[in-house]
Length: 290
Picture 1: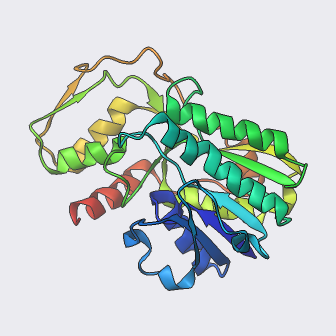
Picture 2: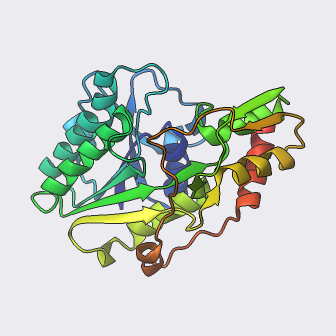
């Protein structure tokens, strides 16, 4: 099977690309000009590369003989991007890829969605807008639009702007204080290797997934308080950092509970296998060696 993957040089995309290459898939990667290849140095020569231009356009040759597109590229808006840049990355770019795939007769498009509510910020709004396009176009060219609603991902090599990485680095550095909300919000944290295996299983079991628009939640299936997550990291890192819970207000738009319903994934014969402490141990050890 030939797979086109966006976001290959990112956190999730690089882990997924490595798994797909190892499993014997022929992988075509889409990257932006100037993207760092640090995460994919070991598999760079195993991937057929195409670059997206400044407006998000992709050469039609990238879609030749492709069976499945997996879209993982995203812009969170944490680096000072304008709303236009966020909309380009999260809505217009994947729409361009979806149209290219449709014109080439690609059967399946697997999208990476967020569990952040639509009206929270520019990131979540632009992600939701692309999902609406997927819902509209599913079955009109692309036979399957599979929308994976991914819970809170963590693991080695994540971006430092992400919450889990930020907390781990602060604790490893023994930062004097870490200002946090009360931490009563409950979140579903999924280790990156489990998430990658979920995507791989969706590809393997794709014939069992009905045509049209299908939404599939992916997470650990367990929700724990953010405070417990942070305290676990603090304890495992043997940190002297003072955790100041309640120093920051909980936002009015904050999601108080998020947890994946794994019914559909279990129907595809997948379930997470990495316990939280095991995943955090690997992540903390890896980040300590950076």
